[in-house]
Amino acid sequence: MENEGTGFGFPAFAGYIPGTVYGGFERRNEWFLQHCPHPDIATSGDMRRRTGIDSRSFAGADETIVSMAAGTGKDCMRVLRDKGLQPEKCRGLLLGTSAVESRVLGLRTDDLAGINESDPAALVQRTAEKVARILGLAEERAIGHNYVCSTTAKLTEVGLVEERDILEGEFFLMVMAEKLGDNLDVRDRNTGFLFGDYTAATALQRGQTRFNILHAFID
Image (cartoon, rainbow, N blue to C red):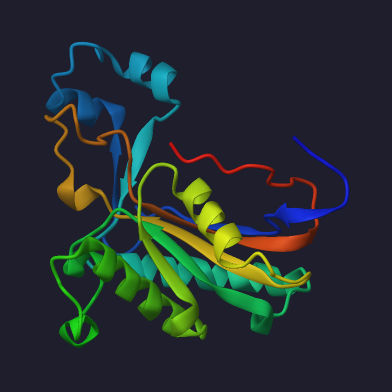
């Protein structure tokens, strides 16, 4: 739904799907069918009709949430600059991921100082701070959320709650990053075997927008 006037919207977008660099690769439907004994998924054609997905990309061993999120964040900031938004107007970074292992996140030993390594929320928060540092944003303005599926809606909700006083021309950089391939078990129907690895970045901005966010519902 649209409305006229000033609201919140997404002025730019950048995405990255691995599979061609850093040792990344793709898995097509046929591979999943050989390893997934789901009785309700009999053919790759049915898989395509049900999901709209032909294949999934998986990141290489050298890629981490930090490297993918920082790279995509830089791309998004470049687009924002081209649209006339100034990097110094960024109020903070919102990072969402379901990854909870330091190796997958891209956290080194020195990054883990002072936090509980068994606490997923603490690990993701520290990851957000590291990505913010790489992007030249204030670490204290970084917010990490351990979330999956509705990450965009969740980060939007967080952004609106955290900064209701955001001014016109200011924005939040929102980055969603997943590296599910390391923990993928296609034999387990409870895992997200339909999802591949990816990162996406956008910006939440107040101002004249085409698509205004009237409500962010989190299930």
